[in-house]
Image 1: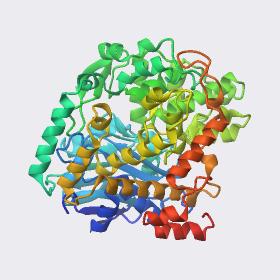
Image 2: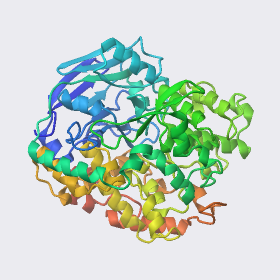
Image 3: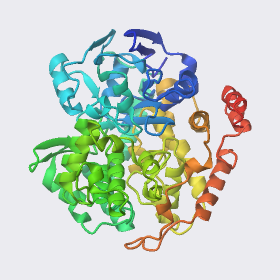
Image 4: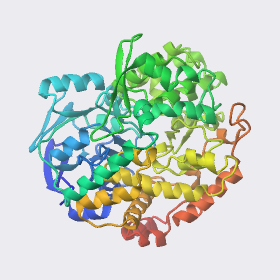
Length: 613
């Protein structure tokens, strides 16, 4: 098949059995790749009610048809599983070079099931597939593991590894690659750790078969011309995602002190220019990317190197914890990456805990004597290690902010800033209703990449909800296609490369001749399937899972967004409109008619038998 490696690796870690299978052409044609493959396999193959950390759960790593080609930023691979953090559908994409190497070895997907009693790592070198002893690496950091494993097997290998947080099954543990690229959200590292798999090492030497290579060359040349001549190209190349820090401060959407505020009086110390002057080593890019938005940094104060921090980490570990030293944020970023922990979920959970202390819900004695106040850098380091190793109070924080709020009660759920168990990315939403609706309705929880609507919020009127539901549904249809193609969305988002060019590139690679409308239909099918997964796995799933924390109903106390807030009436009206655009009922459940319209007849039958529809 054009554009695909053509093979799938299936591994039973309990039996230490590796199978190499042909990619089903119908899977590629109907589900494209990436999160499309993942959604289909998770729904079909994981039994209802599976414990996410049990051997019966599966961890799937999937590329897309554009992955590894020379199309701009064709650098994404997606990890997916039943999330140990949320209990629902979960996936998280990863940049860098892993996806290209896997495609060059001839594989589109890895499906992992079972669990090994002893630590292993997966070794892939073209046709050579082996499960090797990982005892020498178990207990070591993800960053250290990557360096040492390359020394053992060769620099040509691309490696994804977990750290102690994944080994110890912290529910928001991540998977690290390329010294700072993460599959960060939904606890992918915890599932990998539960399976006894420390790392995946890949080397490939084959090419990718293209339907129309000359056509792709011409389309790519035109795309690069467009990208490099856009006004924002040079600035984004210089600062990457950190460039948004000043903008968020100016709009009053920078999360500050557990999202109590939307601006931070010391933000200028975390801004992109000071960061670049103080800690930048060099710019860095993922595979085939002309934007090279990554910033490789070094902290003289702590002696740490890392790719980052990016904006989300600056927001969640900086302003949200009231830290104002970019070197402290960089150091925490390095520790999180080496322990193998999502910086967003860690920042959200720790900020929630800090507010619990301020409100008297928790005492310092409850935290093993740790003085976990906002701005206390030393205490944050201490609690981070305790979480990674599930020691003492770290066992409770390792469950995430939603589980903590359910345990503590006392109305603490009001300021646990999450939806469906996943902490908000770094955007305060009281003056950004479309961004809030994006968080509420995302199919993995409160994640920004599914529908980043906050700029449109500023243009559409911040105290209005009109048009938000339609906008969010449209963005949730287009943006996830990038994770099915296997590409980064930044050329489309930041330098306005028209989506029609992606359609041309997809067809030049695959020869499938799909229209934009056909691709949108596939995307909508995937979205409804992931929603159905939630419906199947949560007995009481419905509208209440889409509701935001109570903090969004509090008027913003100060700053550029002062006085702005949402009401329950407005939030529910947005949901009503959104469900209508989706073709779901008013409890947020896909209707039988919608599922059948999308070709999901078996899913409709499953939910009907469960009396869900």
